[in-house]
Image 1 (tube, helix red, strand yellow):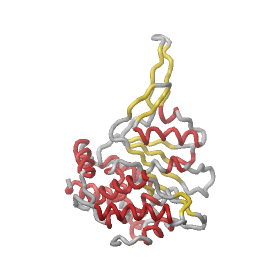
Image 2: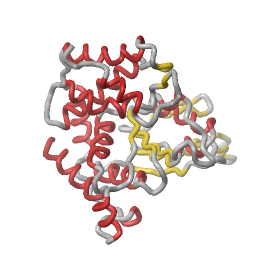
Image 3: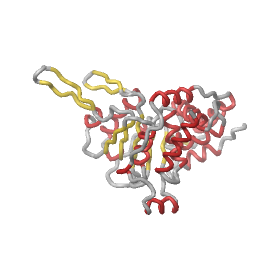
Image 4: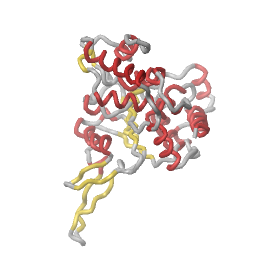
Length: 304
């Protein structure tokens, strides 16, 4: 399986040049059975990453452009009355796929944003007192623009908490952007990648991730990080028990990608900022990107 992991990274990194850490975290998130939030300026390659990941893993992919006038039924689906049969028939929305790209999710109203809550947490939706199971796997990649841009609605904490990780792609380095200008990378319109694994292989990888072991020393280190957020008096929104479970899942996936069947403190450190930064709120609002999670990570000694 690890040979396949190397092939997956090679293909993804041929599409997004110079973004190896971000593609690694995106794959970690999927293998850990989470959801991914990508926050960045328009035109940074967020949509390209989502499409490339879905195609490389051979998953059914749909993209929904969120707008201010979008309704929950536009995502989930709607029951339509059949006059001939005198009954309502449910017509599935775009959420019924394996990889859903919720593009610019924070341009939709809070009511439409919340339509994804049940889908992301319980992998099902409820319409007119009936429940419908979503495909397996079900992986949401949502993109959002910076909140200082016009026409955005901030995601509430309950929605943010459904995302295992939040990452940013950032500007490409000069060499990567030069290659793009020379046409040496694919545009999103031309993206047509080969699936490198099938569904059974993906399930086997996710099962292997769950089987990764974490010793007591690693678990105590994780708990020291969590407790530091709760009792230091620095964080208005400390990390929850759900976050501690998610952090361990992500660390296991990172260990698996690094060809180990056990977690080490470096695995926790590698995923910590992506897992916690969108969950932490400080007492003071004067914090830049990653400051809170970086400060928390640096304040706890893994060897203590």
